[in-house]
Amino acid sequence: MVEIVFRAFKFALVGFFGMGIDFLFTWIFKEKLHINKFIANSIGFIIAVFNNYLLNRIWTFSSQNPQIFKQFISFLGISAIGLGLNTLFLYFFHEKLNLNFYLSKFLAIGMVFIWNFSANLIFTFKNG
Image (cartoon, rainbow, N blue to C red):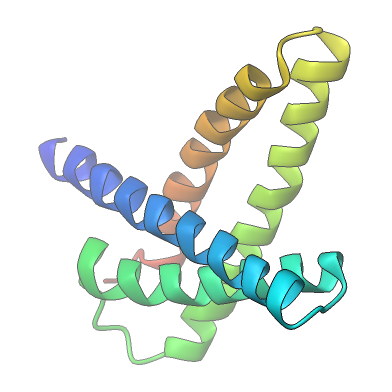
């Protein structure tokens, strides 16, 4: 149990760092390179997912699985589902329950964290 909590903490740190990377690259592509904001956002998201995969593979889960591409596709798919869940939870909490937008976003992030960590623990990094 302690190992899972420690891994969840590491996963959260990687996610926090990834959020910074997402924002940084979105800003660079949107503001400095004048790329469409939705394309810039997608680029930032993809770079962050790639970074998060590498850090989680090496640091959080210490994976030695030689099927790196297959593992990355699993991580990307789980992240994409997480993005969709985040949007649904945000909509539900803010639009349906009339909670503050940022409280809704915080709650959505917390719920999606549970999905992302659990799904990656069970599917992506199940064999180390």
